[in-house]
Image 1 (cartoon, rainbow, N blue to C red):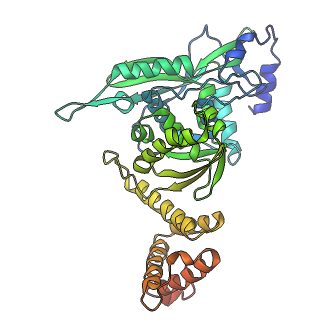
Image 2: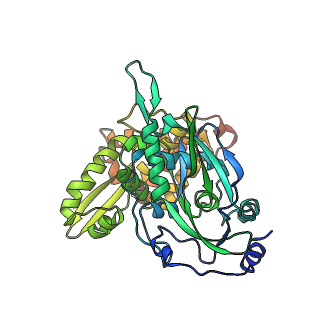
Length: 417
């Protein structure tokens, strides 16, 4: 059934109630006109179960979901309620639940057919939900003197209580009797513990928030453990919205508002919040930032880190490390030689498409640096920027390509940046 037909069918049901004033207290509002098939007097309809071990180091978080976490208004009746003070264990639950559903995520703009399948599978069924299972040790854990890692059930219970009571939305539902009912949908429903795992259900509203990647960024699954502070985690997530190696301006009052702070001026915010989080990101993240204060404004420039230098307990897969190294190389060149975003993406395309070309590009850059350091040259690497750098680098790329077997067959087949 198409979305239009489904929506028309639901809206044609008799409307016996109007939205009540309770909606003024909601954290977020459902999409305008969205109506859900919900009858709380009937059992849940579990459509899909997510209980397999998480294998990826990365998760995709939609920006709209982040906006809900920091309390940005969504809808004319919504109120600003921040979740920045949630326990770090609750942040772990959010990250782990997103990781569980990663294989089913889609972008409705680029894959409209998958959106149609999603709606037919979930939105045409009453009380549609999914079930998730997360290892307790992945949410909160202790390390015993003998090295054994154990889950902290009390911390997990505290995290679940917080999410149930604070992360929710009011939606309009129609039950099987045709009555319109305002229904409160918490992020976590029906939680339980057994055999070292926590199980809970997720309703269709929240599931769709995680599934539809309209605008999103990719993060490390271990980010909450690396930073250990929910407000720092959310700031790091928000930082991904801005291009690396470019300065952007923020008024300190806006930073106060977004991240639930109460600093009296930009200088105190920089010294009391930004300096602390930058120090932590430099040691425990793959993206950090520089900042400078000018009056009431703070200029911030995000930049990529080469690796996680401060936490040897975080083990990443070789494929993840390779991807991070590729991203760092492209961002490093763009920052150091003042390349455009388009040129940076061109470099990334080359090194992600061909491993042999990646080796050529990296060895060519090393030769370029050696050239700059020679006694007869003695010129700063930083002197070459923009097209001047690319033209010089391409000459070294060609020289490195000439050393390969491919050159004999395809003399003009070298990668050009």
